[in-house]
Amino acid sequence: MLERSGSTEAGWRRERGEASLSDVHASIPVRNAWPAWRRAVAFIGPGYLVAVGYMDPGNWATSLAGGSQFGYALLAVALVSNIMAIILQALAARLAIGSGRDLAQACRDAYPAPVSWFLWIMAEIAIIATDIAEVIGTAIGLLLLFGMPLELGVILTSLDVFLILALQRLGFRAVEAFVIGVLVVITGCFAAQIVMADPDWGAVLRGFAPTTDIVTNPDMLYLALGILGATVMPHNLYLHSGIVQTRVVGDTVPAKRESLTFATLDSTVALMLALTINASILILAASVFHTSGRTEIAELGDAHALLAPLLGSTLAPTLFAIALIGCGLNSTVTATLAGQIVMEGFIGLRLKPWLRRMVTRLIAIVPAAGVTIAYGESGTAKLLVLSQVVLSLQLPFAVIPLVMFTASRRKLGPLVAPRWLTAFAVLIAAVIVVLNVKLVTDFLLGL
Image (cartoon, one colour):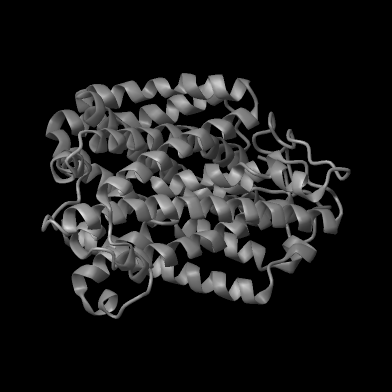
């Protein structure tokens, strides 16, 4: 931990310490002599790592359930959720560029030690919950594609540490290229499935327009809350505020403003891709299951099993499984980076990436493997839901500090968020927190 200094920066209790992910911090050059388009290209990458968090198995489950039960009606909720995510991730980039701190460092440097340690524990719980969802999602994908037993699939996911080692040795651009490449594969898989499903595109477009049924129909409202509540993941806010600093950001205010513009553009475009994929899951469920009367589909395994007979193609379920495994592989990369940022930022503890990954993964594998062995696939599905509830509980501990920091002129100086943006962010934070509280309450009452 850093000691408090008498000459700290205005607005912060402590001076900035060593940057998180120090081996790749400011490792990607952005030169003033380059034309604007080339400087913008240099910032492409972090947004796509962030977008991975919006395609986890929890999102898949809610999109499948929403599409199979209510057709295209909940596409509007997916759109609104994505707008919320774009705003909050833009604030994460603003915090990083304006203060030179990631969200974990900002919490450490702004709050007393007991508060900082509490927030660190909450963030670590969120990382573990994220990892559990990733373990389960990858194991289900291996089961669907290769028929591999869930127990073996859960254990094999621990080997992804070698993937992380290989990528990080090649540099951060290699990490980003891998993630973007897998995202292209996932997008291609869903594009092919959508073509096979041949949805009613008029109904799809109408689905993006909100209807009063979303509020008046209790079942539809519950699923809408599920989509909203599972949208913003706490680890993504830490992740984005850390990895955006892999770019060289100038010291002048105009240079920082330009960097913020490019970083926001990167994350916005990437999150629109995430919306496209999540919407594709919902559209696929609506056009295949809802129209055929199979309105009860919510499990990944059920969807996989029914795609072939309903679409008349054995390729569709294969593509579905490949996309699910791709999401698991990408989550491996982003969860590792988020874990490093959280541990280094809050308490200054620096572990080798492989050691950090192995410890976190083992903590996630123990409950996943135990539940899988004891209860099988049904127990795994319940653990997946529980991991989303745990993530929901952690969300306020990341969102509220982020909004407060970016609204403070003392902390961000000239890069403080405009009042209209702060007001919008406060509204978003309030909505997300209230919806997550409702989801958690409903979950507990349903036990």
